[in-house]
Image 1 (tube, one colour):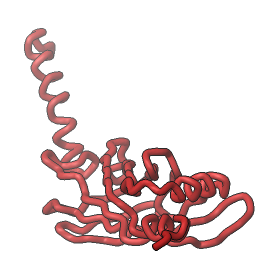
Image 2 (cartoon, rainbow, N blue to C red):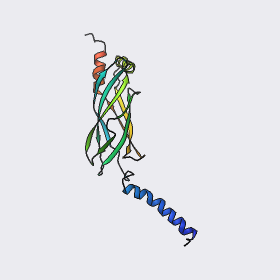
Image 3 (cartoon, rainbow, N blue to C red):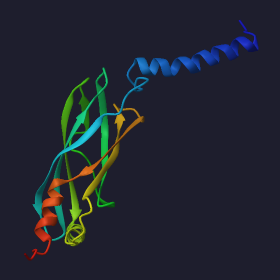
Image 4 (cartoon, helix red, strand yellow):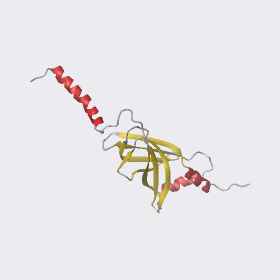
Length: 173
């Protein structure tokens, strides 16, 4: 049976509209209106010191404000300190699920060339009282799909404030 051209066009339109709906229903696509997870830096510590590199452990607290679980894979980030690129890394776990309305800690490890940290320490010696800020930004895929969910967080590291105080010249009374 041959369908008229307008009927075939209507079927193609329905199929094109139905495919994303079916994919969303199967969990391949993020739901409409999904809010970005809120990411905060819970802890930053040094794992090991070496002449060539320093390994850090970063613990992120990721809060899911949505009413549905958020499956993430390929979680990656860039960390800027004092307005400059400092490190890049990825989650230790290949997949992470953020439960609906809950907060979960996500461990990350990354390495930084020792020379880059020395540069940062030199800047910390400056007597100016400018904030020692960071910017953490990155993305993760929705489950195993190619759809990405971006995130960004800005703030100040108190640890860097303490380092600055250590490297400031002593004040005379």
